[in-house]
Image (cartoon, rainbow, N blue to C red; front, side, top):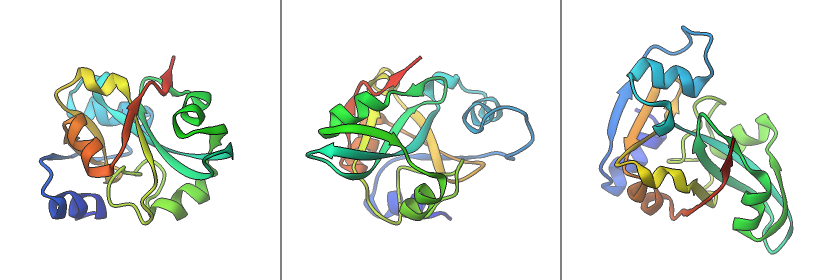
Length: 159
C-alpha cells in the first residue's frame, strides 16, 4: 500500500493498519487521526523532520513525538550531539522522506534518517504513527518502532 507498510511487512515487524477519511475536520492531522480512530491523543505520535547544525552531527533527523506536545529542539540537538536543531523546511522534509506533510511516516522513508522517539511512548503497549499517507495510521509497539528504525528513545517533547 505505502512504502511504510511495505517496509514493515518486509522486515517482519508486527503492526496493525488503521484507515480513516482524512480532511473532514478542523483539527490538526494528529488530533484528527485520534478522533477518527477513537483513541487517546496521547498515544498518537507525529513524525517531524529536524535539521542539525554544529557539533558532531549534521544533516536531517526524524523526531517522533505525541501530537499533543511540541518538539523540544534543544533536546533533539543534545540527543544527536549537535549544537543546534531547527525544524526542516517543508520541501526538504518531503524530499528527504518521500512523504507529504501530514503523512510523513517513520518507516519506508526515501532516505533512512537517524530517529529519536519521545520517551513518553514507552508508557503505552502500542502507539499510532503515520502510515505514509493522510488517513493511514500504523499501530505499533514502541520497542518495535525503535527496532525497525534503529532509533533511540529520549525525552524530546515539551508542553
